[in-house]
Image (cartoon, rainbow, N blue to C red):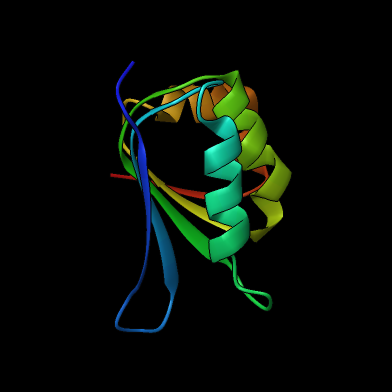
Length: 97
């Protein structure tokens, strides 16, 4: 298991970004959910930067689905098939880098 880290920052334009790295799986899905809950603006969208994520399992996908209507995802090409097959790309914006 690769340790994961969830760090919140503000972009110069004022947008809130939660950057994740490592693996997001059952062992840390609750921490990922808590990080999103804490970072999500009450009146806007949270950008979740997944470019540092090497692995995302169904527990991580469940967290993303829970908040999907309030998220904008930035994902590496490695995760794009998982996000597409799960249907997440149909309900939230996903930018692939």
